[in-house]
Image (cartoon, rainbow, N blue to C red; front, side):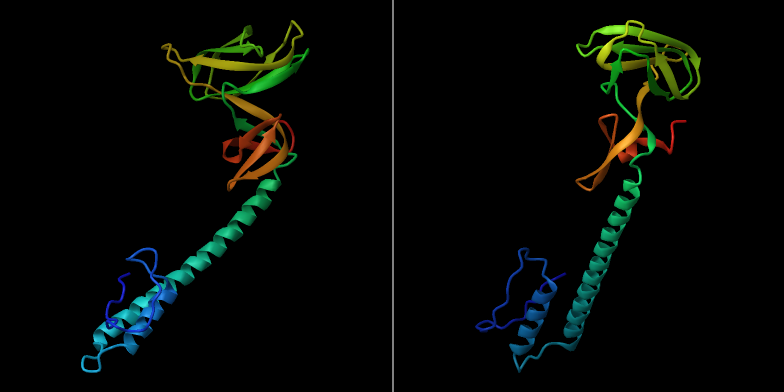
Length: 219
């Protein structure tokens, strides 16, 4: 919005300047309009057309501020609704996108691992690594269609501690299919950080938009 420039030189009226030469607040605009009316030259009164245009500008500014205030309130209400809905994830069993660095715990027993294939695969290799990054086991699967899978790591050596696993999948032409690991488990906590929602699954913090499915029990 353009500023009003017709204030007569030498006027005692003081108008607070905005931080930007091209932007004024509603109060600043009104002050300048009143100052202009008070200090106009009686021999050259303010043109009616120009005055009407300035009033129209003021009206538009008022409406925009009201719209902005309403939108701010609506966004605040939507955020509250989102938080309430997200809080209901606590105690639910979820599947979520993971990454190849996600760790899991083995306690001397077999462990079920999840992964997702973006396309049909001819060969799939699941490699398990210990906390030192050493490969300790490998599972091979053949001819799997696109979708979510679980594989049982039998852990024949009864290993314990923290482990990671990497999934490599290839189609019939030997092309890498960029398979992804999947985190699954019960949501133990729901966190709100920086306007985003995160859930804790098996000690891993996961963004809520990475969740693939939610159920009451493991399916």
